[in-house]
Length: 82
Image (tube, rainbow, N blue to C red):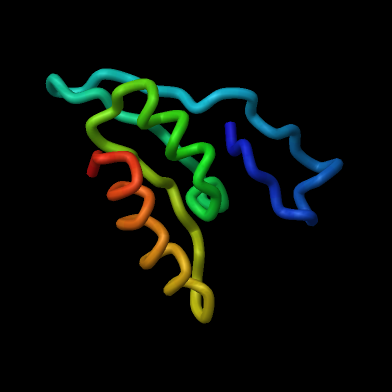
């Protein structure tokens, strides 16, 4: 369901059309996949849905891992969630 595709993903995968949420132990969770965290819109859409926690499945490796380590807390702060 990844919504933001790398150029190399184009034509191989279809982008997702929504940002799913679910309930877990009384919390509303929002789900993002890897590259989605580099853009404000996916996290903002989850924030608008009232999520308490954004869960990110991420495979960003060295030497680019620092990008997501910085982006994750920024997106959480932008949307007042964890």
